[in-house]
Length: 240
View 1: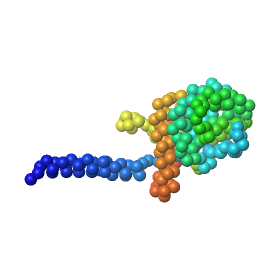
View 2 (view 1 turned 60 degrees about the vertical axis):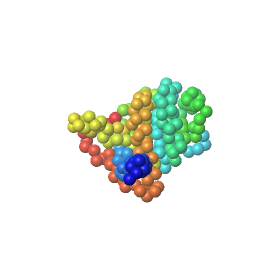
View 3 (view 1 turned 90 degrees about the vertical axis):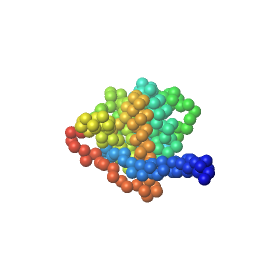
View 4 (view 1 turned 135 degrees about the vertical axis):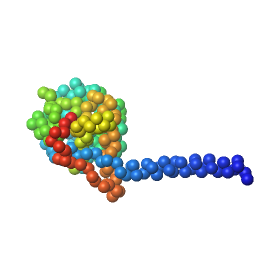
């Protein structure tokens, strides 16, 4: 018996079947992920706002990262740069994705300066500034789920994910494994701090990938929606 030949075939068999086995383990995981939670289902659209172009910018039928830069957007240049580099550049190729930044009327020139600062000759077709009256800005912001208010300049470092149906997405339970093991009370993540690089790179990027996977599966007819609604939470849950 040629043991060398048998050994060769065994090694070849392992090399062939090991990747296949690995993929079989991955397959159910990719089809049974937990969808990104709906933390609010009544986000106001941007009908009262105008953009710097003739194009009408709306949230409906888009996957939107929504931010509020206020009267002095240059003071939020770090947040805008993080958003550009860590979110926009990563997801701009996905269908119906957009970044929309809300500012008061009169801040158009300042917005142009900010865009010039963060623009590195890349495609910014899906990066939009929209302008409206202060009351309209507050109305949109208050339609979002957030415990933090806009500052006196109508700005915030928090950014939000809004889906195609004007639902705000996030995490109903943002506890770490350690916090769960300690049985700490669940708390919500409804927005993301654009100054905190780790939060954007880890939590927000993961959440956006999950949302894009959901819509991709919906197009294929494979999506089984068990997404939880915000009203399923107990009233004592904390919010971010």
